[in-house]
Each structure stands twice: as C-alpha cells, then as structure tokens.
Image (cartoon, rainbow, N blue to C red):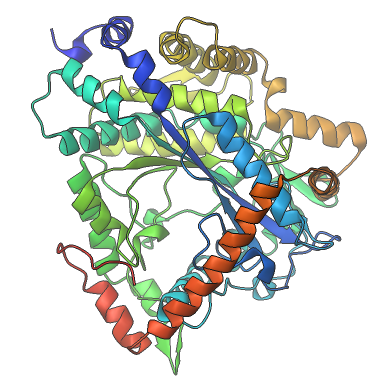
Length: 534
C-alpha cells in the first residue's frame, strides 16, 4: 500500500515509529513583519529611514519594504517559536528607541492617506543595486498605485528539519534524489496550503474595516461603519480581499503561476519576467534619464508576483530568485496571508505560529493532485469570500465541485489536524494541540476571531477604524518604550547597524558599470553558478 493510500492516522503512526517526533523539534520558523511608520497624528511619515537603524540595503534584520516609511523587521530562522517572537520583540524595542515621536502602525491597513504622491519610495543609497530596488518600487507604484503598496502584513517562513526530510523520504520509499524529493514534496504542500488558504483569514484576519481615505476614488460596495470607516459586517481580512494588492490576470496585467512542479513554477515566472505587457508598455521604462520601472513585462522581477504562499530559496547577492530555486531547490516556504494582529504588540503571537506549523505538516502529509483551472478559480473565490464574508452564518465555499459551509469544512480540517498536532507535541498536551483547541473555538463562535473582536471593540468604544488603530499604536509605543533590552542584545544591533552602513559603502565603491549595463547583466543571468558576493 502506498503512503497516501493509507489513512492520515496511519501515516502519522509510521512517521512516529521512524522517530519523526524528535526530528520535527528542529523545524525552523522565521518571521518578516511589516510596520508603517506614522506621525503621532497617524499620517504616514515622510522622514527618512532612521540612520541609527543602519542601512536598509544591507541590514539583515531591519530594512524597508515599498516605502521609506514601511519598516520590515526580520527574524533569523530559529527552532524555538518563543525565541523567534523574543527576537522580534527585541528588534521592536530597539527600533522604538530611534523613532522619536513616531509610531509603528498597529494594523495592516493604513489610514489618513493624502494621495499616493505623498508616500515616499524606499531609498537604499546610490549603488546600482540600491537604484534597482527603488526603480522596482517606482514601477509597482506606477502599475498598482502607491496606496496599495503600504498595506502591511506578516510573512511566516517555514522549513522542516533536515533529519525529518531524510526519514520522511525513507518512509515514503522514494528513490528520487534528496533535493528533488524535498522540492517536489514542498510544491505539493504549497498546493494544499492554497486549497486551505481561506482558513488563515478566517482564523487570524484582522482587517475587517478600512479608513474611508483608503478607497478614495474607488467604487466599492463597502458599508459605512461611521463617517470615517468602511467595512463589511462579516469581513475577516480586507487586506486579502479584492481591494488589496493582486496580480489581475483577468485584466491582462497579471499571471497565475503554475504549481504543478518546481520546474513548472519557475518556467511560469520566467515567462512573466520576459513577456511584454501592452498596458505596462504605455507607462514607459526609461523616460529621459529616469527609470519608471525595470521593464514593461508582465512582472518586473519575480518578487512582484503576488501569492498567498511561495516556494523560496535563500539568494546570493543579486541572484535572481528563480535561478536560486533552479540551482538549489526549495529551501523554505513563505506564507504571506497573515494580517498584522493589533492584539499582539509585535503583530503576531505564539498561538498563530503553532497552528501554522501544524498546518504545514498536515498539508505535507495529504495527497496533493495538480490544480486545474476550475479548482484554481475555486481557490481564488474561496479566499475572497472568506476575506469579505468569512463570519457570515452559513457561508458556503467550493470544495471538489460542490458547496460546503465554511464552518463544516473548518471543523473537519481541524479535527483531522489533531493527530498531526500530537506528533509535533510528543507525549504531552503541548502548544500545538492547545492552539487547535483555540482555533476550534473560533470556528464554533466567530465572535472569538480577531476580526470580530476588532469590530466589537470599535462599537463598544464608539471608535472608527482610525481612532482604534491609533489608540492601539500608541499603547504599543508606550509598551515598547517601557521594555528593557539586555546590553548584549542592544550592542549586537548597534554593531549590525554599523556593519550594514560599512557594507553599503563598500557596494557603492565597487560599482564599475552604468545602471543600464547593470540591469542588462542582471537580466542575462543564466544557470551558471553565481560569483561570490561582492
């Protein structure tokens, strides 16, 4: 009998007998948390990235995303969830020491927007690499509008332990080479994560409302909460809905990557970064001496492709992400659908990490057929339905060409996940099973979800979205300003800041070609091994 022909419980038992419980303790988790710098009045900061935080180009833990005001705080990949959260906590504490009166906005959705032109693009210095990053962001703004690009989120990066992969391949009796087995197993896991992607906004969505300023000039059917706030009564994550950032294939300006295999995925991205898009050609690429975008193709670079979950590989200096995947396979999986949780000072909590680790293993251990065009449409529709109406009683989603209520499907999945959580916890009633119980309670009572709790708090306090988000941001600011940071941790971050600035200067000094030539060389990368980092 093949592995997937057995019941899930039997698969788990086989893994347990092979020693998987111990091997899984070495799984690695990393986080990337975005946070918008705002003035004490709640407007997007127009000040530069604080120099005391180091170089956003080269700092491994403190950088910026689209805007100079959109901080991105990154943790290393660690085996202990509490260590990951502790690192993120310390980085927040350190950042707040250098923000003055500015706040980190406590939610995903920005407020008090005064037009996209006022949103400053991230600046990384004068090197070719820095210029490329800024031009890429200018292109995003030209293509999608700058407002969409300052929506913040949390990315959950996950990799199974090497020892687990070895025993899992043995249990599966796979004769594939180790790297190929690992990559294709993770592509299957990603397909299943997409199938169940609607669970994330339901359980953890924290953007059920937006400032009216966010949708200025757009026609929507959002309802009015008060004069400053728009919402859907049963929304979970408007960030993940159709007002958020998407590649709009149906409008001829986007694409859907193929997840049939790693090779198919890379080929679909390669097609997109090499194929002209007529609509983007109207923007122009280089107007006078200024680049408006890196190219007029469907994607400027691979990072532009929006997806809730992506296969990733750590890249060498200026290496194309698609080539890193071809050369070294899938190194880890990046889940991108988490909202910033305003009920947690760092934007994410232990309960979420434990559930997501359980979900990753569950999706790996399930059979994962290829996704056809009909199922792709169902996956996308389920995501938007849950984002807009996830807490609506009786809401139905599409599963296997039939309708099933979100509640029934969620109950079934969480019940199935119990055996997987037990494997992760070992003999004790550990944190993974405890997290499942909390998620089960949210399925039974949608008022326990973060999105419902936010709307309830807004009603009880008679606050609009902006007022609540600003109040919570101020509370987080006060919290972090009262936190201590051990001397060693502070000195390490000071050292990283100095090293990053020195590294930026080295990169700038090493430039020996024009930006035009630099872009051509970047685009011309082939399968040959990359040169060492400059």
